[in-house]
Length: 115
Image (cartoon, rainbow, N blue to C red; front, top):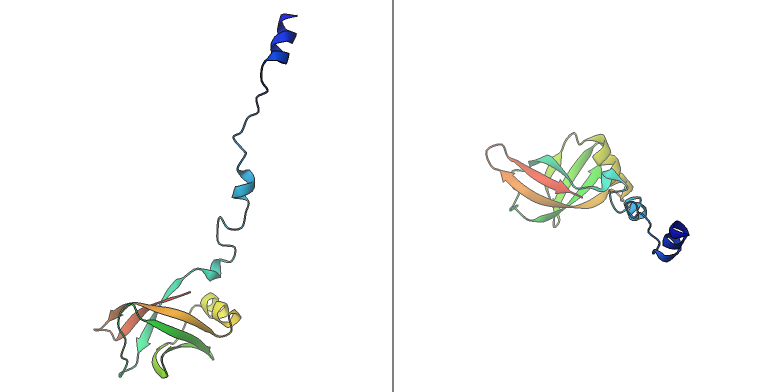
Protein backbone atom coordinates (compact mmCIF):
# COMPACT_ATOMS: atom_id res chain seq x y z
CA UNK A 1 0.00 0.00 0.00
CA UNK A 2 2.79 2.46 0.70
CA UNK A 3 4.36 2.40 -2.78
CA UNK A 4 0.99 2.49 -4.57
CA UNK A 5 -0.06 5.49 -2.49
CA UNK A 6 3.16 7.39 -3.27
CA UNK A 7 2.79 6.76 -7.01
CA UNK A 8 -0.82 7.97 -7.02
CA UNK A 9 -0.20 10.98 -4.78
CA UNK A 10 3.02 12.23 -6.37
CA UNK A 11 2.67 14.62 -9.31
CA UNK A 12 3.68 13.20 -12.64
CA UNK A 13 7.12 14.10 -13.86
CA UNK A 14 8.30 14.08 -17.46
CA UNK A 15 11.83 14.72 -18.60
CA UNK A 16 12.01 17.84 -20.72
CA UNK A 17 15.52 17.81 -22.11
CA UNK A 18 14.22 17.35 -25.67
CA UNK A 19 11.25 19.74 -25.59
CA UNK A 20 12.94 22.11 -28.06
CA UNK A 21 13.96 19.48 -30.57
CA UNK A 22 11.17 20.62 -32.91
CA UNK A 23 12.56 24.15 -32.82
CA UNK A 24 16.01 22.86 -33.72
CA UNK A 25 14.58 21.05 -36.75
CA UNK A 26 13.07 24.26 -38.21
CA UNK A 27 14.77 25.52 -41.37
CA UNK A 28 15.27 28.98 -39.86
CA UNK A 29 17.96 27.77 -37.48
CA UNK A 30 20.50 27.46 -40.27
CA UNK A 31 20.20 29.02 -43.68
CA UNK A 32 18.26 26.61 -45.82
CA UNK A 33 20.09 27.60 -48.98
CA UNK A 34 23.77 28.30 -48.21
CA UNK A 35 24.20 30.25 -51.44
CA UNK A 36 21.86 32.93 -50.03
CA UNK A 37 24.46 34.01 -47.50
CA UNK A 38 26.43 37.13 -48.19
CA UNK A 39 29.68 36.57 -50.02
CA UNK A 40 32.60 38.89 -50.55
CA UNK A 41 34.36 39.07 -53.91
CA UNK A 42 37.22 41.22 -55.20
CA UNK A 43 36.31 43.40 -58.15
CA UNK A 44 38.61 45.27 -60.51
CA UNK A 45 37.54 48.91 -60.60
CA UNK A 46 37.25 51.02 -63.74
CA UNK A 47 39.61 53.99 -64.09
CA UNK A 48 36.82 56.54 -63.67
CA UNK A 49 35.02 54.67 -60.87
CA UNK A 50 33.58 57.08 -58.34
CA UNK A 51 32.91 54.73 -55.43
CA UNK A 52 33.14 55.12 -51.71
CA UNK A 53 33.17 52.56 -48.95
CA UNK A 54 29.69 51.70 -47.74
CA UNK A 55 28.01 52.46 -51.05
CA UNK A 56 25.31 50.19 -52.45
CA UNK A 57 25.80 49.01 -56.03
CA UNK A 58 24.10 46.64 -58.44
CA UNK A 59 25.87 43.42 -59.42
CA UNK A 60 24.74 41.92 -62.73
CA UNK A 61 25.72 38.62 -64.33
CA UNK A 62 26.84 38.95 -67.95
CA UNK A 63 28.33 35.97 -69.79
CA UNK A 64 30.90 34.51 -67.37
CA UNK A 65 31.56 37.80 -65.54
CA UNK A 66 29.88 39.96 -62.92
CA UNK A 67 29.45 43.63 -63.75
CA UNK A 68 29.26 46.29 -61.02
CA UNK A 69 26.95 49.20 -61.78
CA UNK A 70 26.46 52.43 -59.85
CA UNK A 71 23.67 54.57 -61.24
CA UNK A 72 24.03 54.24 -65.02
CA UNK A 73 27.78 53.69 -65.01
CA UNK A 74 29.80 50.48 -64.99
CA UNK A 75 32.27 50.92 -62.15
CA UNK A 76 33.89 47.50 -61.96
CA UNK A 77 34.01 43.90 -63.03
CA UNK A 78 34.62 40.53 -61.44
CA UNK A 79 36.36 38.54 -64.16
CA UNK A 80 36.17 35.01 -62.71
CA UNK A 81 33.50 34.77 -60.00
CA UNK A 82 33.03 31.52 -58.09
CA UNK A 83 30.55 29.26 -59.87
CA UNK A 84 28.20 29.01 -56.87
CA UNK A 85 28.06 32.79 -56.58
CA UNK A 86 27.35 33.20 -60.28
CA UNK A 87 24.61 30.56 -60.23
CA UNK A 88 23.02 32.15 -57.14
CA UNK A 89 22.93 35.53 -58.91
CA UNK A 90 21.55 33.89 -62.05
CA UNK A 91 18.77 32.30 -59.98
CA UNK A 92 17.85 35.72 -58.58
CA UNK A 93 17.27 37.20 -62.04
CA UNK A 94 20.87 38.08 -63.00
CA UNK A 95 20.97 41.25 -60.82
CA UNK A 96 21.45 41.58 -57.07
CA UNK A 97 22.36 44.30 -54.62
CA UNK A 98 25.99 44.65 -53.59
CA UNK A 99 27.78 46.66 -50.92
CA UNK A 100 31.27 48.12 -51.18
CA UNK A 101 32.98 46.86 -48.06
CA UNK A 102 36.47 48.25 -48.74
CA UNK A 103 38.35 50.00 -51.53
CA UNK A 104 41.99 49.07 -52.15
CA UNK A 105 43.54 52.08 -53.91
CA UNK A 106 46.96 50.55 -54.52
CA UNK A 107 45.61 47.58 -56.45
CA UNK A 108 42.61 49.36 -57.97
CA UNK A 109 40.21 46.80 -56.54
CA UNK A 110 37.28 46.77 -54.14
CA UNK A 111 35.92 44.17 -51.76
CA UNK A 112 32.25 43.82 -52.66
CA UNK A 113 29.78 42.07 -50.39
CA UNK A 114 27.10 40.36 -52.44
CA UNK A 115 23.90 39.00 -51.03
